[in-house]
Length: 149
Image (tube, rainbow, N blue to C red):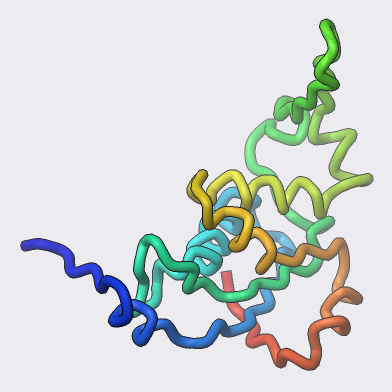
């Protein structure tokens, strides 16, 4: 059986407005949170999903500093960055990065699960990650719906 993909004006007609969701990351495993949020950003769970259109929802992640990492990832997982100069590779373990940039860690995990194509930047703009619950007040006007992960 073939999968139907709407094209042209028909695809635009199927496109519905984006919803807002809030996800509480308290005691949630990082990878599981990232997959759920990435699916929302892509719009994969909607009946009107079209691969070449941005039909995803807006997602606000709160309490990123209370994220859980399984196994020995806290000690063993490394985050790499390169300055562009010879010998400029820097590696920082998650144990050192987590107290300082927990929101960045969650954002990188989610963005790493998005497809690497021209829609990636547009989908990334629909993601907001905050260290604590105080960031939710900025989006009260959008009335985000709570989402259980």
